[in-house]
Figure (cartoon, rainbow, N blue to C red):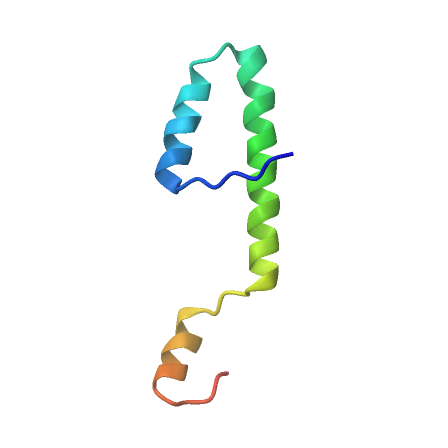
Amino acid sequence: MYTLTFTEQEMHWLNQAIGELPHKHAAPLIESINQQILKARAAAEAAHPVQDHADIQDSRQGRPKR
């Protein structure tokens, strides 16, 4: 098992390259990559919940969060 890190642009190019493969090879690979991305995003969001913009603005102005 390996962990790789890609930028959004690199993912775009990788996705295009995989799209050039025959469907029988590309489809399972794309599905696997997409599932890993979803899991990684969910883990990142759980570890660091994103505040909405109103909360960020309120905290910058010294107002208590809602």
